Amino acid sequence: MDDIGRPPPDDFQLAVQVHHRLRRAHQRASAIFLDSIGDTQLTPTQWAALATLHSEGALSQNQLGRLTYMDPATTQGVILRLVERNLVERNPDPQDRRRTSVELTRIGRSLVVERMHNAMVAHDRTLEPLSPDERAQFLDLLQRLM
Image (cartoon, rainbow, N blue to C red; front, side):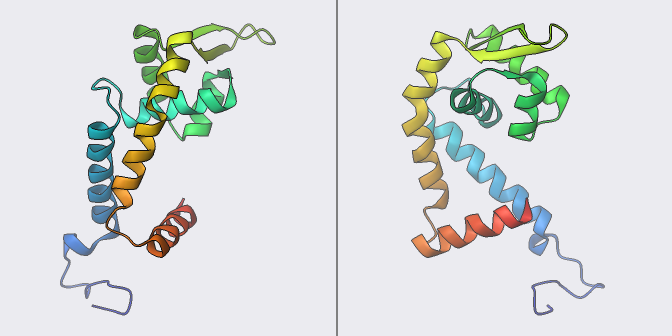
């Protein structure tokens, strides 16, 4: 190993590769979220859309995708599933009828408020193996990678 944890080029080891470790950490975080959120139909990506709409208000599909770092196809699929559950509604944008505006329904607002504590529990459970200082450092380092 070199001084930043990389194996020599002729001794590739998947287990120490950053992409592998990030994928494994993401799998763990997603499993904890699904266990904690209290809604078996709500995915982390759907939660990101709902929480963003809760904090930002009505947004165009494009704005929602940008704020949640989803590609357009994923954004559209997420919105369709949330519309099916009557958690969001789509309307023509009042300033530009070519755009679609997405906003929480009354049911969607209630769900976000009811599940916010559970989302924080998922956050805390995910970071549980780390000390408070390590948690802050880890989140700072992740921010730098984004």
